[in-house]
Length: 285
Image (cartoon, rainbow, N blue to C red):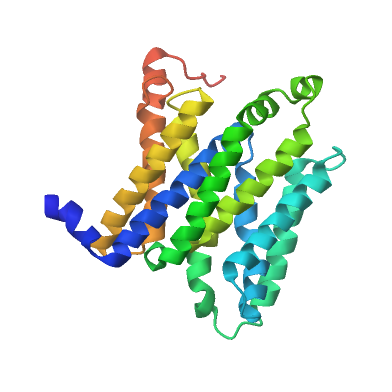
């Protein structure tokens, strides 16, 4: 049993995958709490797709894919914030416009690439292919995200729960939202190498959503979400190694499994517990 758990991590690519996956999971979990509590789950999905044109343009010009994705992510963040800042366009509409427009641009540019295989690790992820250079970049992003949340935690909390009160005490919800969107762009870009454009949204949403079923304190949601991300990464790596299947999807499926189990069996918010207590809404006759 011990060798089953430890032996895979004697391989260098598994070690890099473990470190990279944990760092990305923690980065996404820190922001995921605010994404879930603000009802912004769709924005993670949007950003994961809108970085595609930046990736393709960088690839066609022989530039850094990370830098290309980061620029596209920041453009998305600023665009969403700008379109929705005056309330004339709802935030979900702004997200949809940026999502469809930039993703369509990415698909159009992708037709210029001779072989989609060259970009498959970006589109679908390959946590076992991360290098120590990638890990260094992810570490920098984690430090930036962690420092940003720590320094502006009060502002993030107040604007998340009561924007009106935030304005009354001199805070600018729009400015805080811009900052959060830019941090989200950094987190999404850092996660692309590990789980790809398609699945990075799961790391942003699923651990935080699972943690929110266990506690209603935001700081605890952040800590629990990070812990679930680490556990999901380790479990997914081991399962994919022994079953010889793709690692990224297994990590996401593991996190989804944690959510389903928590949704059913959580001590206070679990479906079965509420069913036993008679707290579930009754269907109207």
